[in-house]
Length: 113
Image (cartoon, rainbow, N blue to C red; front, side, top):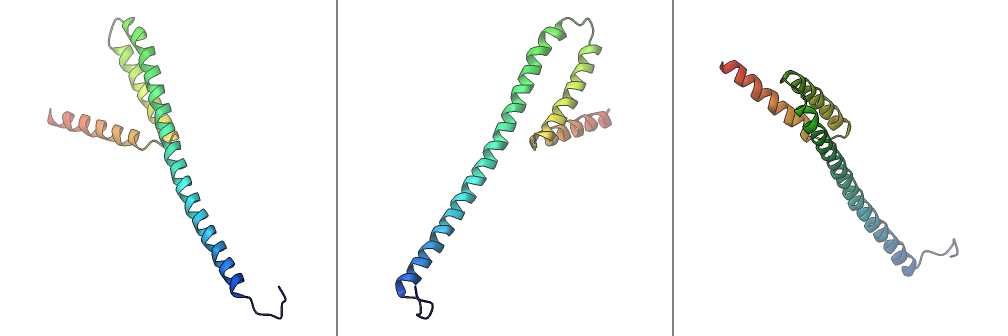
């Protein structure tokens, strides 16, 4: 195109089409990024659930060997702390809420006695 001549109608239509394509591409990218973020969150939750299942499978034979409740209770408290920390590092929002509900229920039962 000659710099002295004004842009033709076809050039203007072509430029508008490119803008539409970039808007559609940016919308598609935004949708894909949201889906990716959601998928990553679900994968983190699944990993945490798998870890909890492995801990339970490990605990069943170990807890059956204890003669009293002190050992299993101590191990359970330590495992709950580990699960809480791993849940926070995996950015799983349900774990802190769950522990908050457990602590508030336990403290309310203690105050009733």
